[in-house]
Image (cartoon, rainbow, N blue to C red; front, side, top):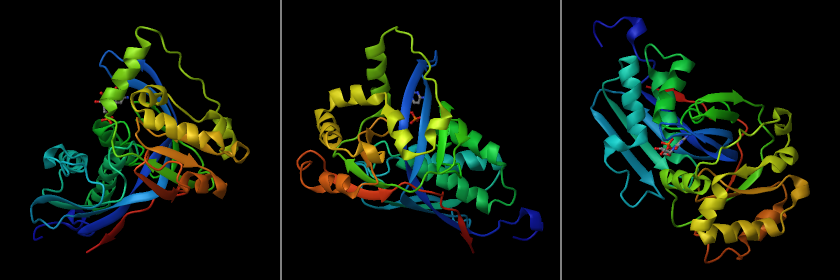
Length: 314
Ligand code: C5P
């Protein structure tokens, strides 16, 4: 530490937070750019369910460890490909600090299900490092780094629980949080690869032009109104490739309490289906065995009314 000015000194050594998962309450896939990427228009919502992420910067080398359930078959994969690791590298390159980090992730978010688990971990690493950094990056700069890591990462680095996003997810408009709503996540034993799902959409659309969806932001302030807008452009193609998903959505929607603003929809490119409802009967019906043999696991959580902050310690 010798020779460092007070300004250069980290504000602590350890930062921890909960990397909350996300749902897409609607997801419109617009034009395919020349680059192959697609313009999106989506409404992101954070959940209470999250991974625990701890980042230490005590100069003992670089590491990434993970524990908890639902790891993909190949574990975290080669560490350099992991999004949380890439977030630390991007931060270090941009801020010139730190050289070393020890990242620990306790997984709670089902992997490969469209819940943004890997992206939430990456967003948490960016927020943790910025909380520790002697010279933190501006919020805009941090979101710029997040945008280079993937379409879900900016929202999952943002400190707002509900936001519209456009472009490749980097243009965001925060909306006032809605009252917390009970959520049942219906998880499947398989994931859906996002690039493949975009490919299925392209194959379906051919050269047909896609009109931008026009949004009434005034319609996004109650669950009842939101329920009328809930839609996921991935649903038709993903359900066609995975009939189990089509069956679950059909089962859930059969008796849904639509008068309560209940929603059943695929999140991201799947495979997870989310049931949001203030009516406990909707969640009980999802648990009563009708989905046995189709869904692998049900997870109960709630929509978040706030993003969990970063706790810094020595
Ligand atoms: O953003 P993310 O890294 O999750 O995207 C995974 C893949 O999905 C991209 O490599 C690209 O093939 C496709 N994608 C796309 N348009 C977007 C976002 C992702 O075509 N807006």
